[in-house]
Length: 143
Image 1 (cartoon, rainbow, N blue to C red):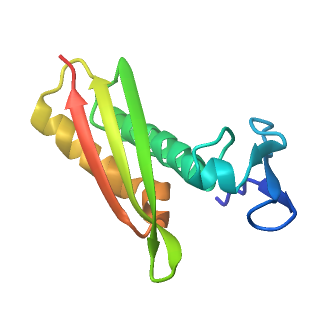
Image 2 (image 1 turned 30 degrees about the horizontal axis):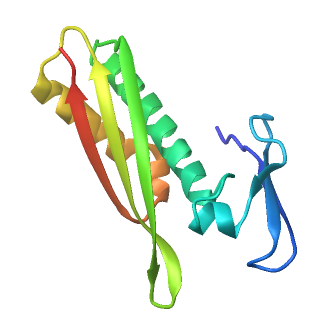
C-alpha cells in the first residue's frame, strides 16, 4: 500500500523581505504565513521546524498507540511534544535534533515495559526514519 499526502508552499519576494504561505491538502493549513521573521526571529507565523515537530510528535504518538495495542495495552492519555532544533553548520543551516517529550497514562503496565515500547515506537515511527538527526525521547509514565 502506498499513500500519498500533499502540501505546498508559495513565496513572493527576496529571502529577507519575502513572504511565504503554507497549505495542506486536508485544509488544516490554508495559505498560512511563514517567512524569515517567523523562522529565525520569533515573529508570529509558522516555520518548517515546527511543522516537522508536529509531524514527528503525531507520528510517534500514533506508532506508540499501535505498539501498545500489540502488547495488549491501551493508553488513557498520551501527550507528546517535539522540540526541533535548527542550527548554523558549515555555512548553512541544518535540523540537528528532535527531542520528543512524552507523558503517558497507561493502566496495567510498568515503567520498564513502557520504556521499551516507547523506544521501539521512537525507532519505528516513519518520521523518525525520515529524519537523519539525533532523536531523543524523554518518556514519563504517570501512575
